[in-house]
Length: 172
Image 1 (cartoon, rainbow, N blue to C red):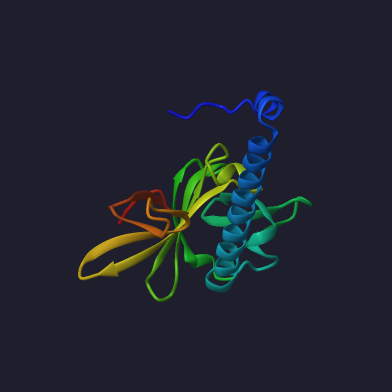
Image 2 (image 1 turned 90 degrees about the vertical axis):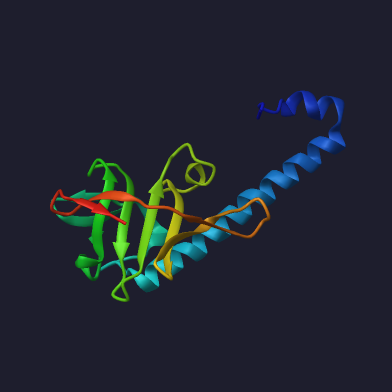
């Protein structure tokens, strides 16, 4: 069970321990920030926007059948190749997940959660980016942001279901 840490009390009773906790937390946040930045650079390469960078996006939405990236200055941009957006989960105005498909056939899922361990640190609330890997008829999802228990890349074999741009079920 995770309990909130009373840092004020900890600092009063054990200042050295409190300093160590603050250092570890800031290191973890820096690590998350670096992972997000690297993953968004990959998005810029595989799924470039018509204008701007995924690093500067503050949110994503679906307008009719098009994915739009929203920026802090209220400008919007679609994907350079709009057909790369194939499906979503949740509501178009505030999706829970977006599914993109590269011309190689590989899928990538953006998951959003403003209360998630990573999403709460990201201005677009991206909590995970998972890349699809298909080997021997087995579909595996590799997380670019979350780590497994062993500290290595986290991957899962699972099927997923979305709604495509036309409103039909898109199952993987």
